[in-house]
Image (cartoon, rainbow, N blue to C red):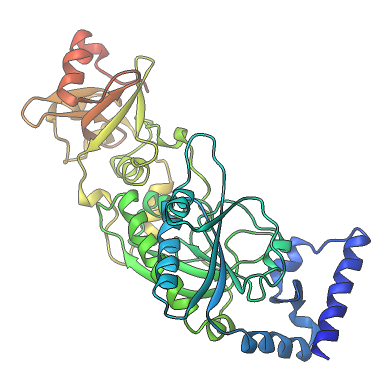
Length: 407
């Protein structure tokens, strides 16, 4: 009876496809589904389908045959954890094969690891034979998996995401957590759902605090390690964990879209000390803060940070996010209130004006509500230099009224 019902569902799905119809994204996003013979079983089909779902989970036992989808260093930690578990012969992981992407300029970290360790590697896009693997795992892959791939896995696909969903759905959750001054973040292991990113049911979550001076590269490594641990934990007792998965809440949803280099450009008139430090912590490891020196792009590195600029106030995440997201307009009289300026001389100057402190050897720049300081500078086309070298080679060559970055 089970086989006959599964076969009927298979034929029904093929018939719908032949007629030119497709399940809508809305349909998939609003209904729980499981797979049987590579086809979705929706909850409204009744009690019998719940029994089929439970039967699938009961029949599937470890070791789990896994297909892993991933690309970067964040994904690599989860792949290494899976591979180590497989090599330990604990009986949790059986077959382990990997899908990654082909990039023009670099070889993804996941691909490098597979080649060095001899893991089976395929390049996206792929066709997954229904039932060839028990479950899929996606970590920092960057591609929306079609229903045909998801439905090929009898137990579905798990995704390790670098935030506490539904907060920071999207491609850059860690960057946006730091841009908004979050004091806590974490990882979510969830079930992949067709048609949309980061909306599936939550299988597991774990959180960590964010220190006031944590940079994105460090936080990424912390979350990658945490995510790998949560993934292995989720695979242990997998059927029960899948059955206990819960829907994401409707409140607290925020988006974390990709960031571009333009996002790290400083607007000296509008950006506050708090905003610039948040940008520095979030973006320096990927897109260093930059500005223009009389038309020439200049990157500013090694910022002098201050704890009070990082919104590190317990139970104050909402106010912190509000302060960071709103670009306040300041009058000139308000631009001298910041007491953390490394150079007292710059506090009375206009936004963008610079002063080099010979004692502390930092370059201070006036912004919207005070001044920020940097120890290193990179002028386009030149090697990195100290603030002192930038002052001697560029600032000192101009009259004092031109000692300023472009607004």
